[in-house]
Image (cartoon, rainbow, N blue to C red; front, side, top):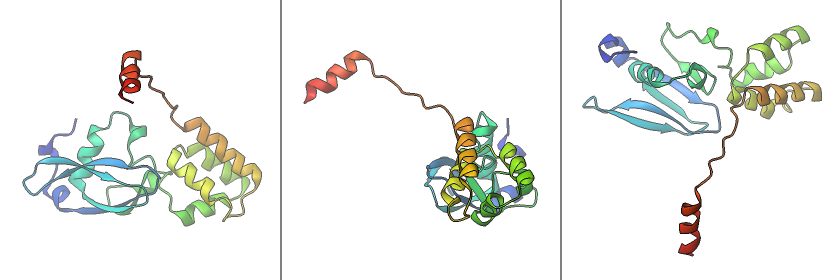
Length: 170
């Protein structure tokens, strides 16, 4: 567990720039001028700034690394400190890089499909497939990979008494 005391002055001062390249909104930790912790909702398609401290605290609160938007391809780094290795995250691809992947040779294509595991990145690949003139086979392979890595939808059922309360209000 990360402790605020292990965060350096540089972490508090360095302002990073990221872009939410997914269609979903994601909450991150933010600190106000008094140092009080809050939360900011980052909508899909929006660029945003946060301190390295805010990113580190947000990442520390995430239980599964696959849910970390800074590592799973939901957020694309624009300006980050040198110690954040963009190359180590195959899901942090820009649109031009995705187009290159879609046009790559068969061997490279197979390797990319093995390492890409972000639903947001794979959905962006599907959205850009027509622009890249990707074959129907590749489109179907991306669809299959997306189905494989996408979290299963859970439907929550209200209990009967709650349903009856709602029904009787009308």
